[in-house]
Length: 252
Image (cartoon, rainbow, N blue to C red):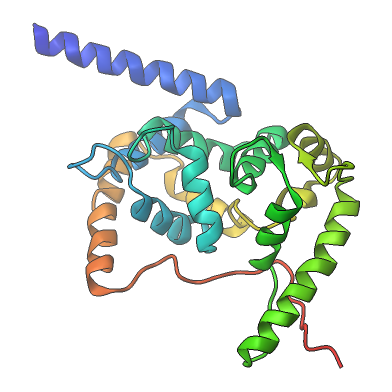
C-alpha cells in the first residue's frame, strides 16, 4: 500500500511538472512527456541529476551548440543555486525553451546565459567577452591574432552597443533586450549562439514525435553510457567551436 502511495505521488508530481512546462512554453503535452523521458535517461545514478559533462555533450550532439564558453554559462544559468547538477525538470524547461514559439522566453533564456555574473544586466565587459567567441581569425601568429581579435571585438562592441541602445552606464537590461528580440529575432543570438540550429531542432523533434514515453526510454537508454564511454576514450563531443562573425581580420 505504501509503495502504491509513493508511486501515485511521483505520478502526481510529474503531471504537475508537465502542466507547468506546457503553460510556460506552449509546447504540446505529449512532446513534453517524451522530453521528460529523454531527460531521465541522462541522469547519473550516483548523483540523481544531470551533470555538466552530460549536459554539454548532449547540447553538442543533439542541438549543434558547441561553444564551451556559452555551454558552461548555459549550464550555470539553468542549474539551481547550491544544486550539484541539473534536475530533470530544469533540463526539460531548457528544452521547452528550444521548442517554444514564444520569442519572449527565448530572449529571456539567452539573456540569462549572456549575463555571466547574474546581476540582471549586460555590461560592456560581458559583451566584449562574448564577442571574442564570435570572431574568426585566420592568423597563425599568436600575438597578431590576439591584437586583431581585440581590435575586432572593440569594433563589434561599438556596433552592438548602438544596435541595442546601451544606456549611459554602458549596460543592457533584460527588458530592453527582450524588446529588441521581439522587433528583430536576429538579435536574440547577437552575442553568440546558445539556441539550436533549425536543422538540429527539427531532427530532435522528429526523433521524439509520434512515440510513446516507453519508446523514448528505449531509444535513449544508453545515451549516458555512450557519453561516459566517449569521455574514457578521450573523444569529447563538445569541443568544436562555432562563430557568428566569420570576419577575416587580416585586413590589408
